Length: 106
Image 1 (cartoon, rainbow, N blue to C red):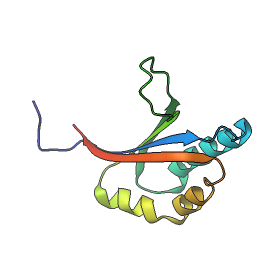
Image 2: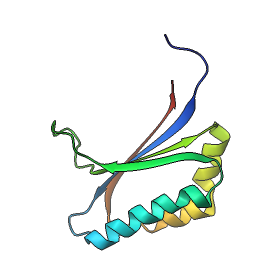
Image 3: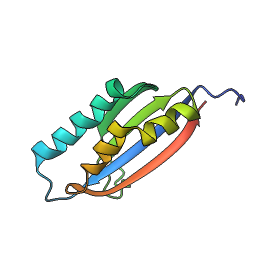
């Protein structure tokens, strides 16, 4: 049964890193992303993992990050927060592509 009361707003971020990206730099990016949970109010949960699907349908995306928010306003504040903007500005040299999807978990 689908209800009209959303439980949590999910912000899903997928990263595909360049083949030339050093492993220690990718590790630093992951650590930096994780640190946003403590630096930006409104993030209620943060989790991440690497693709292990045997289907081969990941289109090069290797890392998945999921942030949860209680409201659209919290998510919007995260997007423009200086710490988030700083983090995004560090990705250029290592990131091949990204994909972002937001949805209300039910």
